[in-house]
Amino acid sequence: MGPIRLPEPPSNFRTPEIFVGGTYNVIKRAVVIGNGFPGAENQSIGLVRALGLSDNHFLYRVMRPKGGVNEWLRWLPVSFHKKLDCVVRRILGNPQLLSLVGQKMRASFPAKSGENIGLSSVLEADADQIATMARETFEREGPLLVVASGRDTISLASSIKRLSPEHVFLVQIQHPRLQLERFDLVVTPRHDYYNLTPRGKQEIPWFLRKWITPREPPNKSVFLTVGALHQADSASLRKAATEWHDKFSFLPKPLLVVNIGGPTSHCFYNVDLARQLVYSLENVIATCGSVRISFSRRTPQKVSDIIYKAFSNNPKVYIWRGEGKNPHLGHLAWANAFVITADSISMLSEACSTGKPVYVIGAERCKWKFSAFHKTLRDRGLVRPFIGNEDISESWSYPPLKDMADAASQVRQALAEERGWTL
Image 1 (tube, one colour):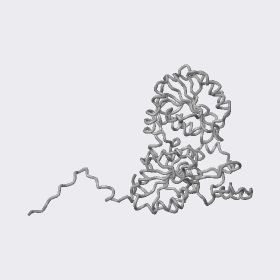
Image 2: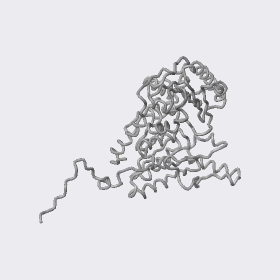
Image 3: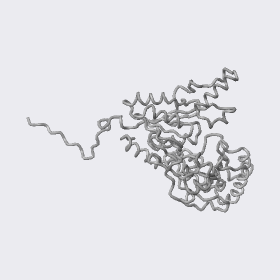
Image 4: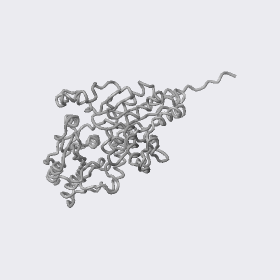
């Protein structure tokens, strides 16, 4: 009997990954380290979604003491803040208010894959536990992607990397200011380097310059975006368009969505901006089919009251004041144009990713890096100032922001080049 000849594999045959490198070089899971602020956590979750890990990620939080004087102590390092809180409560002698130092504020499991991420359902982040989990499950589940955002997460996230450097890839969103070598990749807006630009050097007083970071230009471990990362990708907007179809599809067009944030230290305003917004909206409302207005958690009551008083009886206008399901993604999907207050980089970044007209009110009140951010948006043709003589029925477009896709691509590239890992 002659030898048996096996057929050759097809030319497009791909060796299964388990025979190439097993699970050791494939990331299939992620941990998000949050700080309890939606603006920061949405950036991390949005990046995880863009990387295809939306169904296999867990959310942990760095938790600070809250209430009373604690709201004035957020500038302290988290660990010191907790210890100080413990001491103060012991001095006050109330055993029911003892600090949670050494204890874990947690439910049975952390929030997973987009589930309810209220405080009661989220595990408090513990660097030792997460690093141990990454090591002990490495052979079975492969490397762990850790994505963190916000100042309070920096120390803990870098500790995870230090404790398990061979099993973790750490992405820090928003600039950590110092010691970038603690992270595998930093994703941050370009305007975080405003202090190094010629205009920034002119605006920042000389006696403050040595205290303002970053002090060095970005290196290869820093990826610069235009705006903030977010969860409003094309898949989310398609889903939202379907979910909100019955609510928004019948509204007269064009639909103008007005998003109102709140004053910040770098973009301060008061009731004067609210009155300016009312005046401008009243001038353009004839060119709108319908208008929907929403406020953020930061919107001062006196600002929302002025808006409500001006438009609550206008049949074209609906004001969402927090009742029922948040329509934000539905607004992004169904709006024909946006008016957004200048203070919110997150809301502007989301709106500018749709390619629809975006009008900004209050940009002239912003300073330093906020001012640089708005200049970039204007220079790219992404936004126009809202002054009250616009015809909302006249549309205009631009190449949408694609920070999410670009950041995800950079993460994949860094994984491959630095570790030989894939997603």
